[in-house]
Image (cartoon, rainbow, N blue to C red; front, side, top):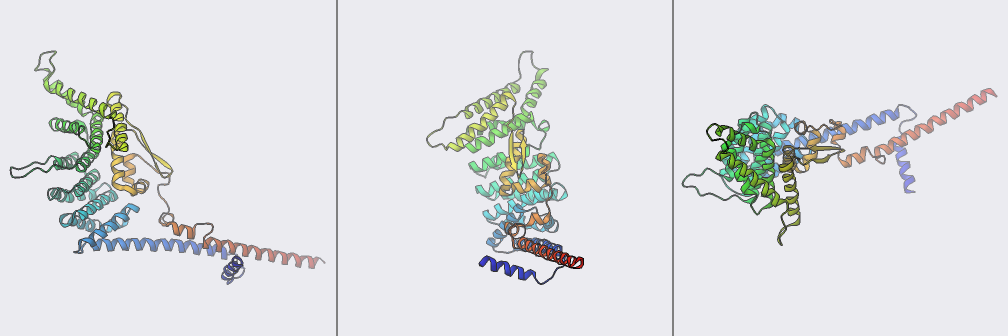
Length: 445
């Protein structure tokens, strides 16, 4: 009974117009217009909420600004806010920089993340370069104002992202890398006490530094500075923290991949060949070859490390697997190949540089990584990834799951009403045909 009454009510709703054959198409167009109009209203509402969030960054209360930054992060992760950024780029950037200057550690972390998302949204160009130039002094100063680990890590990740996008020449990238290096190796004056960096800060610094190194030409770097960097990374392989070991091992694998050690070895050998007797190897050349042998031996030991009572199995397994890959690359030249699903397609990497870029961006974007890979042309260019459906229809793209059920599902109210209207018109059409057939039969009689 209930089902029959419901059908009657729906039929009554559709009985207001008679047998116009155009009613079906009109109804369909009307429902589609309602869907598109609803989506446009939703987008306007989202833009309005973003406007309100940016306005809230001017508020004096820190908790209000933190809430606004969280809302902006969520919006930038769930959709690429190109239109919004075109209007509010400068305002959003400079309010976030103000948050870094005067905010709490939590606010600095949130603002740093928003700036990174802003850079990924605007892509390469003048805006990204402006963002880097305006942000670098503020971030550099923020590193000096405190050593809280989560804040420092957030600033390092932000600096890596904005340099990756906005660094238009090697000098800019190298400058950011030097700033990162000074976080764990600060240049101290006589009245400053060194603060020992925590394991998470060291790990983040090495990961961020490596991420930027993927964009550099290893053959144009200062040999002295790089020899010190390689020695330091080698020393980190002896640390107890496994995350430090893994990040440092991947950085060293990247250095091998870029040919930096080979360059130093060749340069040292050539520069001293004319001044040394034949058969005597120069001291610098011997040192570099010894360093290379040490790193390979460290990788071999870490790839087979036995677990202790307090060691986490997952961390130990990750370390072993990573250093097996590193050792295989050091000895045989084979880089690990990675394949991850992006929607119905696969994104593949086959070099240490690509793997480091992928892992860093996945970590930074979190739940927004898939969305950005599907729609962010900057990231698609970085990985040479082109989704089959590169541009989705706005109406499909903006529909929430509840709206899809409402408008697209076969059991939705709209589709049920449309089906009932078609059935009604079919019955009316059949009735007319029967009437005409009866009339013709009467005429024949």
